Image 1 (cartoon, one colour):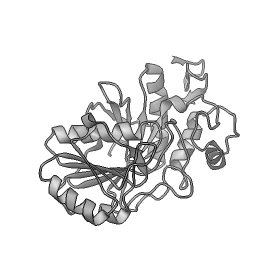
Image 2 (cartoon, helix red, strand yellow; image 1 turned 135 degrees about the vertical axis):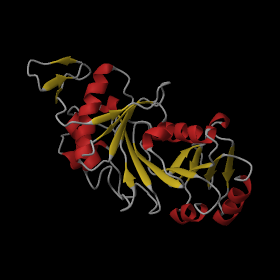
Image 3 (cartoon, one colour; image 1 turned 180 degrees about the vertical axis):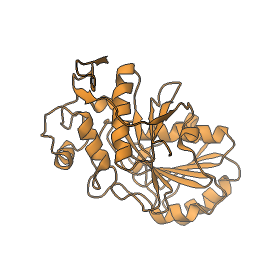
Image 4 (spheres, one colour; image 1 turned 120 degrees about the vertical axis):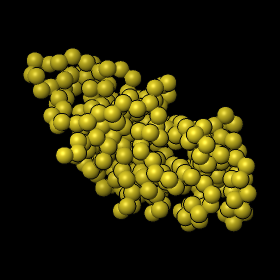
Length: 286
């Protein structure tokens, strides 16, 4: 990243696009642990949506909480790959939600990290439980329920289809995720999940390079990353895969736009790196 001739602009090395220098006085907090960065309360139900690292973020947070002695359940309202043994202590699978509830009630007494699902499909993905089931298990002796609310086919950016995301009304927090590596990519299905829907939401023609304003529009749109957001949920975006100084400058500028779109705070990080959360960006309290 280097400063352009205009002192209010920066140019991204990756895609060559100019970005506005952040203008607001923002408070930045350095934190390496996800649960500290989020400022979790007790008995949270957290739904992850978007693209660019949802599943990785969810399992990283779950392991942090487990290591802190908390009881955690991971599940999905769509489908996720069945975790490796190193990612969970026990997976509980049953197509009968009554049976699954009883198993969860039993095994939550012995394990701190459970993964729940109804069955495993031919792709090796664990399939969804119902929103009603989420409401029921929240009354068990568990501290946190983490769930994935949509899919993104491994892409860094997406727009939701008509049937998604599936966010239970009891969710206390929704974390929309984007990969910074979406910047500069052409808007097509090779790089962006449901690229035609992204084009429809943002006005960016198919084939054109995705820029920061495109990502911000997807986040802010009520049919984008704010779709199906429960009224009482905290909406805390995560800008993921920020591993270089050049990415950090762009991520901070994007974070400013997301604060303006209603986020209480924005996390900037790289969830597959040792220092997972680089910054938490918040608007100052006056």
